[in-house]
Length: 360
Image (cartoon, rainbow, N blue to C red; front, side):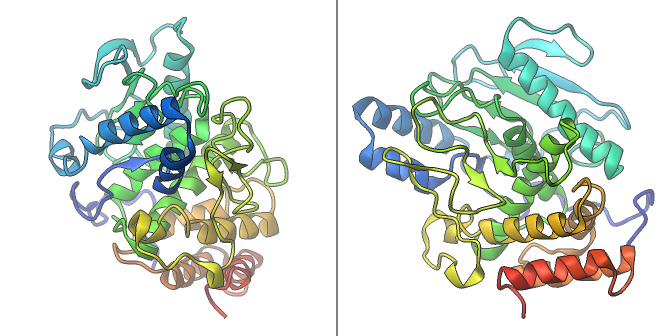
C-alpha cells in the first residue's frame, strides 16, 4: 500500500553514503573518452583537467554526506558560492535566499535552477528539499578553469564554466541542474547502486525529473516540451542539440569531437559491456523513453500523473539493486493503486514498458 505523502512517520530515508554513485557528473565517460581520442590538443588538455578535478571527489561522498546539515523545515534555502576559478569548495558567498539578483548570470541561473527544482518536489510531491528534511541547497559556480562538467557531490552542486568550444557554462540548462539535484533525491530514497541496470535507473530518474523541472518552470504540456537534457549546453559549432533525448534516444548529438549519442531506445539494443559502470549513462535511454511514451499517452502536464507515479515508485518501492523489469512492475503497480486497475494511466505505463522491450 502506498503511504500518504503527508505521513510523517514513514520509514526514514537511507543514510547518506549508502549505495550511491561515487560522483554524479552530467558529462558521461563515453563522451569524455571520445574527446580525449579525437579532440585537438587544447580540448584534450581541458578534458584531462576536468577528469582530474572530478576524480578528487571519488570516494569522498560518504564523508561529505555525514557532515551536519542545515535544516529549514518547509522553507526554501538556497546559497550560491563563487569558487573564482579555484578548486576549493564552497568558495565565496555571493547570493543567499531572498538576496538581490546578481550581475553574474551564472549566479542567477544556479539560484533559479535550485529554486525550480525545490518547487517541483515541494509543490507537486510535498517533499521538503532534497533529503525531505529541509537540506539547504548549496551551489558553487565558476569551479576551476574551463571545467567541462557539473556534479552533485553528495552535499552540494558544483558547476564549471565550460571551455567555450565544446560546452557552454553548465548553469545554462535548468534540466541539468534538476538532473544533478535529483541524484541527491535518489541518494536519500531508493539509493540505486551505480552499476548496471540499477545505475541506469539512477541516471534515468535524474533525467526524468530534470526534464520535469524544466517543463514545469516553462508551464509546458507533454506535447510542448522538447524532452531534451542539456539543450543550450553544447557550444556553437558542435553538431547536436543536447546531451540526451527522452523522445528519441540516440539522436541528441553526432559530432566529430563528442562522438555519436549511443543511447538505445529498446532493451534488445542495450549496452552489455563493463565501461561506464555497465553503461549507466547509455542504457538509461531505455527507461527514459518509457517515461516519455507513458507521459505522451496520458497527456497534459507530465509531472501531474506519470511523474507522480515515478516519484512514489522511487520513494516508496524501489530498492538499491532494482532492475528495469522491477522498475516496470513497480510503476505499473503504483499506477494501479493511484488511478485504478486497468485505468488509462496504468495501461499507458504498461504499454510504454512493453514498447521499449522491458516487459512482454
